[in-house]
Amino acid sequence: MASMDISHPLRTAIGQLGLTRLARELEVTHQAVRKWEKAGRMPRTEWTGETNYARRIQKLTGGAVSRAQLLKPWPAVPEEARDAA
Image (cartoon, rainbow, N blue to C red):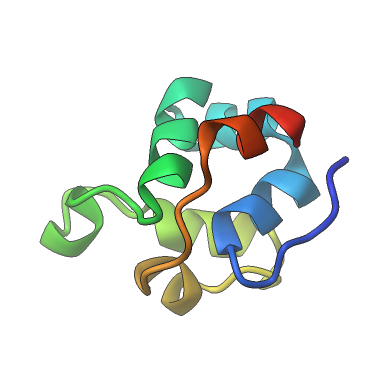
């Protein structure tokens, strides 16, 4: 698994769980997770209450990544850096 990046909570979750498992548990594609990672934020639906991915990630990571961390802006990850992870 990739090393944890505390400044980027989604990368921390990916590092802990793996991209495939995280996407499967959230019932989204791995491309969706990579899109959030690239954008540096969770999808708009997290703030409108349509989804609860941040809360689910917090539960899946045993609190290592909090909902609050996920709902704050985090650094966007350039595509070449994602590919290296």
